Length: 417
Image (cartoon, rainbow, N blue to C red):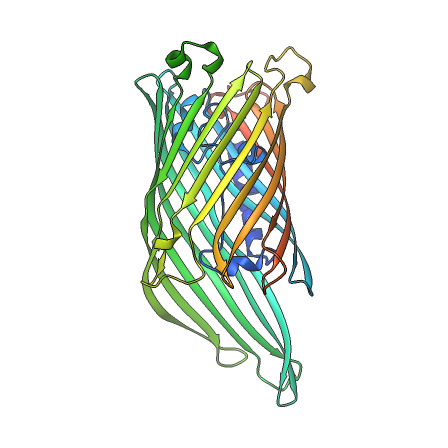
C-alpha cells in the first residue's frame, strides 16, 4: 500500500508540473522547427555538462541504453526543470520564467550479472514556448498583435540492455514520439466596437524511432593495467523516422463561435543522430568524461520541403564528478557527489545566414538519502545567440532536480501504515 501511494504521489507531482509547459516563458527561437530540443540524459549528466554516452553505472536514466548495464537496483526517477530566461535584441528586453516536468523512468534489473536491464519511461523531446507582442494601427485604429506558441513533443520509451562478450554493453530503446505544437495569432483592437481576431493552428505529430548504443569497458584487461579498469568508450545512434503530422486550424468567425478545420496532413522526416563519449574514473573517486553529439538536420523535411532555417546540429561537452566516499558509515558531507562541466552547441537553426551558437557552464551535486535513494541537483548557465544582425540573445539560468528511489518494488510493507 505504501509503495502504491508513493508511486501515485510522484506521478501526480510529475503531471502537475508538466501542465506548466503551456505557459509562454521560453525562448523565441522555439518558433522554428520542432521547438527547443532536449539534450538531457539526466540531472547528473547535465551537472557535468555532458550527455553521458560512456558513463554506465548507477546514474539512473541515460540517453544511451547501453549505459543501463551498470544499474544494480530497481530505480524510479523523476526529473524537473526550472528556467529563467532574459532575451534581448539589443533594444528591447524580456524576462521569462518557466517550469517543466522533464521525465520519469523506471529501470528494473532482470539479471544484474549479465547487465540485463528493462527500462520504461516518459521523456521530453522538445518544447515550444514563446510569445511576441507588437503594437500598430490601421486607418487610425490601434491594435495589439500577439504571436505565441506552446506545446512540444514527448517520448514514450521501452528498452533493454545486456552485456555481451563480458567487455561490451549493448542497449536498444523503442521510442514513440508524440505531441501537439500550438501556434497562435491574436489581433486585439483597443476599440471594443471592432471585432478581434484569433487564429490557432494545432500540429499533431506522432511517430516511431529507435535508439541503440554500445559501450566498451575492457581497457583494464586490454592494457593489463588497473588504472584503466574504469575507463569506457561509448557510441550511440538513433534511427531516422517518418512522423505523421495533422494540422488543424481554429479561427473565430464571431465573438462566440469558433470553426475548426483540418488544413493539411503529411509527413515530417526526423533525421538520424550519432554520439560518442569517453570516460575514466581515477582512484574510485574522480570521474572525467567528454562526449560529442550531432544530428543530420540537413535531411529534415516538413511535408517534403526542407526549411531554409534548419541545418545540422552538434554538441561538445566535458566535465568531472568527485565522490569522496560511498561508505554509509562515513560523515554525510563526504558522501555528497560534486560535479562541474562546460559545453558548446550549434543549434539546428540558421537565421539571417548565421548559426545559433550556445556556450554554457554546469555544476551539480547529489545528496544521498539512505542507501539507494538520492536527490540530484543541477545548475546551468548558458548564452544562446546574439543581439546583432536581427538576432536575439538569450541568457538562461536552468535549475534541475531528479529524485531517485532505489529498490522501490522490494520494500517490505509495514503494519504501521
